[in-house]
Length: 129
View 1 (cartoon, rainbow, N blue to C red):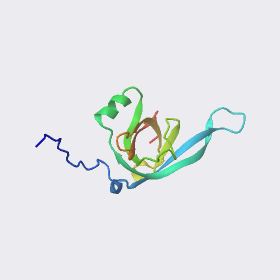
View 2: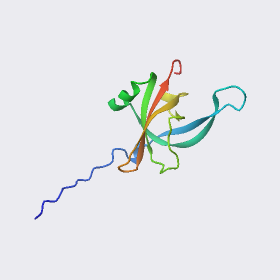
View 3: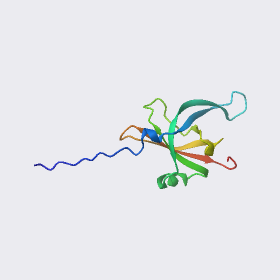
View 4: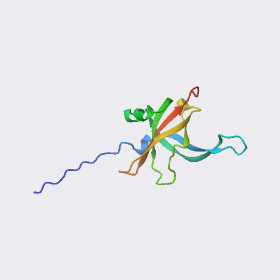
């Protein structure tokens, strides 16, 4: 009998039941008046996410920026309907993160399975808690 490779089923790391927390993605638009800056926000996507503390890999990325808080989220891949960008902001609908607008620091797509997107979020600056 020929030597055949043995394959064993590996369950996915993230399952649909793990996506329990509502999140909303916003894009800020420039002020309509003569003043510079961004103020008006536009909801561009909403979904459920799995939220957890940043991994060591994520912490290495965060070492390059000054952050007060950070989390990592997994969302279902939208298949192009919405592509997260570091120009967007995220609102996590959870009492522990009330009134915090999270900046997208890094987006990691799952090219192997095309099932989930991992997004590293951070709150920059001081006095936002």
